[in-house]
Length: 309
Image 1 (spheres, rainbow, N blue to C red):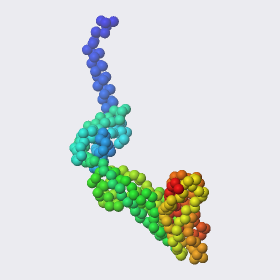
Image 2: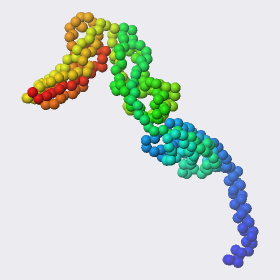
Image 3: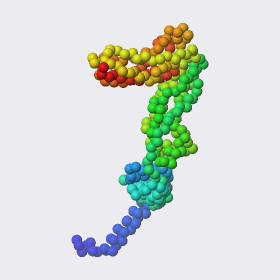
Image 4: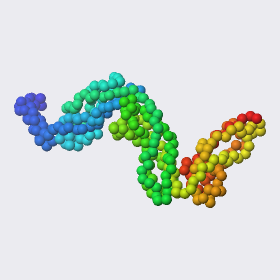
């Protein structure tokens, strides 16, 4: 068998070589190689705590090479480009861009453009800012909108110092067009500056929504009334009420003249102080008589100071 194999060995090897060449040629003709450029988002990794990115490119171009069948099926999400910020310092950093292909794809990276990017890094700062309301539209005929109430009225914004300085106004948009009743909604925060959309990208807002209450009342006579706490029970033996604080202390109400004439105060909801030995703090609804409208949020905070006799 060995002697038989050695006969015409050169021809046998040449046949194998030609078969390989032919297979490579046919494969190449059916699925040739090619290149393409993919635009992919630029990610950042390993940024140290206490630092924040103030400015960076959003995407890069990656030139890849492979069989045309693989190239044609390649998606932007199949290519991952990133800048490693483990050694970044405050200021502008020139960082190399790295890229890789997701596992399972037979595609090679030829070039990344740009190969380096400038990324501005700053320390995180915080700023407390007041929130205002931009009212859009008008109530229906015969109604009017009163002063908006915002909860909370201020928010905490964290981000790069240079972007915080550019914030001119923090506001929410409330649409009350043709409203015939009170408007209440949880609204997202918006920033007003020359680079509104870009600025928001680098900022952290807490909270990112606020509750807005806009009283919408009929155009009727008004009257300012005190708020009276509706106490139920008595403090424990040996204790007494020292002081009661209300917020708000007075409210504006709207109603026909004949109904206003009978109103001397607005009650809070029932507040149980029976057996109390320490201060009682309650957020309670106000008891609004039928046919009466208010210009305030219909709730009050009542603080009842209980002390030993």
